[in-house]
Each structure stands twice: as structure tokens, then as C-alpha cells.
Length: 543
Ligand code: G4P
Image (cartoon, rainbow, N blue to C red; front, side, top):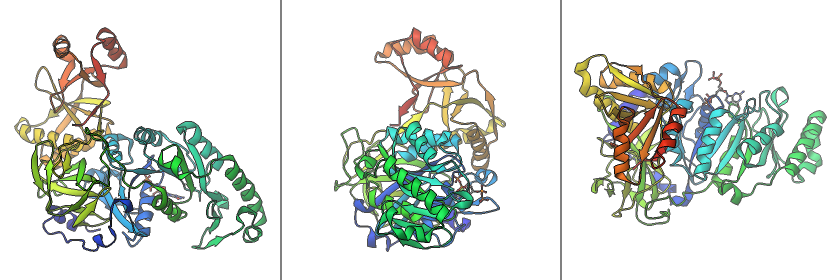
């Protein structure tokens, strides 16, 4: 991974074009746009790497993140990320296999960065849920799963680290059924576990994937095939066969329709580190994960078959190239056949935008792309025209809906060390709010900026980026508020009166929407009880 090259290429003018990209890119039906959801440390990075390897997008293991020095090549350009060894920004990775184009949208694993993650999940059609076999379902897995459920995103489950001692496979499946209320359908079952791990068995294909080798043995007779007993140690065979039969009988069969409706999850036991059963996972996605689905808009669902191009911005990344102060807007296409140079309507500003430098993201390189279909994600370099939630169309005036913003859980007042740097601070806060790193509020009295984040680690990132990219040093002071809610009311004068009566508690967000700030949930309920006409929203749609 060449950091310098990556940074220089950010201006896009000098990027190579990817002509070969069009060879297999026929239309949206060949697209699988998905994300991996997991709790930190479950193995998302390792699995990502193995998927990229299988897709030929990288050539050797360790390229995504080299072991030992904590270097993560994916988005290495951010200091804070290097220091902490966590991935703080999402990126897009495109690769191809068997004529299918996989667009993997990376979601930051750390629980602090949910806003960005939520938005990324609005741009995918399916997800892989990675669970650590030793830990089962963890907090962040559950949180992300709930978002997927809200959006009916179908999920394939990968139970990882089966090469290590872990929970009993049945216990893991029962956890998924009970805690996530999902029907489970085991597809690839472990043969032994931990020290006794001998491989995996594909219950649908009747293939035994042999641990410690690339060998796959097919058994025509399935679990009853006498050959199975011959290739396994008698002790392993007895235990495995009982468990596999119980699994096959005790749980649902894989039903692709129920999966695509989000009611059932096929489960693959495997090991990302050992590259075990990762190909089965990929095959499942290729064969059964949904191709781009209709996307909700204010004029009804937009079908991917539609011949007019449309898409929406789900993420904006500022300062990918510190030398050029650029921004890249990540656009997910929802219909039509996009070609480089096209003029698209920017619905919010009612202006046209010539997309002459659309960037495709491969694992380690970026390239100009000549075309894209529904499901594809491109980056459009721009100087602030494109915002998260924006819709691009080919001459139509609808707007995609459903991109959420969440009420922050940590609020702080921004203190600027050097008052001469006010302009830089304002610019930095605006840009980083645009990225979704932070929400910015102005108090109704005084001129304080209050920032809101979902987790405190974001504050470190914010301070570090404002110092590094905007040359202003800031610190954060506590405020007497821990809860923020957007407020609205059908009757505008009732709302105005409420704002007037509660002026010390009301701030404005970047779009001048009123936000009620209070100490805790108890105070919130108190004020809600006394103001039944006012609606307090913990989420709002980005428009
Ligand atoms: P994350 O992105 O979800 O946070 O997880 P990541 O892939 O970084 O994996 C977390 C740790 O789990 C890593 O070990 C990784 O090597 C290990 N791991 C991932 N998949 C498997 C697996 O299938 N089997 C086993 N046994 N381990 C697995 P680490 O010690 O934290 O980092 P490193 O020193 O290996 O880089």
C-alpha cells in the first residue's frame, strides 16, 4: 500500500481509468452490495482481507492490515487511526468473482462511530454478521443488527474463530434465535472445535472441508455416506455425526426467500484467519444475497431496472488529500446506467452536476470508472456541493428518503485555545459535521458551539482532526446536558412559545432546526409530560 500514491491520487485528474471494469459489469443483477457487521475483534478485518484475496483484489494476506505494527492499510492516512489502531472511517471495496461484482462497504467497528455506520447500512442490500465463537452475540453486534432489521437487510451469519475453543455451536445458534429473533439455518457445520478442529461440513452440498489443507471431499450419500466414517477419526466422526444430524433436524432448512425477507439467517461456521469456509460464505452471497432492491423515495420506490440514473450520497469524507482540501462524496447508485461525464441533477440545489471524475474504489487503488450500475458506489470529488442525504438524478425531481441522523449521547462545549482561529474552527466543525463525525449545535443564548457525539472517542478524533487539518487547537468542556432531542409541533406558534419559554435549553442544529437539551431522561420525561403537543425526536431524517 502506497500512502503517497493514495494521497496524490485524490485529485482524480491523474487517475488511471479502469476499462476492464466494464467487461463483466453488465447490469445491476450482478451486483452484491453488502457490509460486515460485528463487535470489535470478532474478525471483520481478517474476513475482509480474505474476501478481497478470494476476489483477487489483493495479492497476499496481510495487505489489509499488516500484523504486529498495527498498520491498517485501508485508510491509513488518518493519524488518530494509526495511533489507536482502529478503523475510524468507512471505505468501499469493490471486487469481482464468478461474474459477480461485490461492493463491500466497510463499517467502522468501534462502537463510538455509529452514525457513520448507520448511514453506510442505508447503502447496502445485505450484510454479513460476524460472531466470535467464544463470545457469542455482543453489544455492538446487537445494535447493528437492529439497524439491519429496521431496514429489512438480509443477513448471512459467519461464526468465526471455530479453530479456537469456543461456545457450543448449539448454544451459539440458540443465542441468535433467542436474542435476535431470527430463524437460523446452519449451512456449514464445524467438525470438532478448538484443539479438536478437523474442518467443516457443508450440510447443503455435502462437502467436507478438511482442516489444514485445501482439500474438499464430496460425499454423495450425505451424513449417511460410509465414506465419512473412513476419512474421520472414529471419535471425531461419532461426535460430529450426532451433532450434524441434530443440527439438520433441529433447525430450519435454508430458505432463500425467508432469508431475503430478513426472517432467516443462513449460518456458516468457519475461520477467517485460517481462510476456512470463507469461500462458502462468498458463494452464499453470490447465489442468494439480493441484487439491488428498490430504494425508498418521496415519490415511491425507485426500481433498479429503471433506465434513468439515480443515486444518493450516504457519506462524505473531507480532506482525503490534506494538500488539496478536497471532499469525496460516496454515491450509491439506485437505478440506470451511469457513464462518466454524465450531467446529473443535484435535486437539493436544483443545479446540474457534471460527473467527470467518478472514482471506483478497489482494495488498494482508486481508479476513474467509465460506468456504473445500480448497487455500485462511486466517489465524486467536490468542494462542498454534495452533502450526505443528497439525491442525484437524470432529470427527475424525487428525493431518496430514509437516511437517519441520531441524537447524540455525549454533549460538550467547544473551547477554542486561540480566539484568532475562529474561522478555522467554524470551517472544521462544518466539514466534520458534514462527514457525520460530530453534530454541531449553537446555543440560543450566547455564541457557544456545543458538539454532540455518540461516543467520547469521537471527541479525541474531532480535536485531533481540527488541529491537524484546520490548525486550530480545541478542548471540550462539560455542559449541564446529556440528552438532545429535535423538537417539532404541528402548530408553529406552540413550538415558538415552547422555545421562548425554554430558551436556555434550546439550541439550533446546522440546519437551524430547534433541539431541546436537558440533563437526563428523567428531565426529558418531565418536560414531555407537560408539553404533550411537542414531539421530541431521537432520530431525524437527513434532508
Ligand atoms: P475486527 O476487525 O473485527 O476488530 O477483528 P480482527 O480481524 O482485527 O481480528 C481480531 C483478532 O482475532 C486478531 O487477533 C485476529 O488475528 C484474530 N482472528 C480473526 N479471525 C480469527 C480466526 O478465525 N481464528 C483465530 N484463532 N483468530 C482470529 P489479534 O491478536 O488481536 O491481532 P493480530 O496480532 O493477529 O493482528
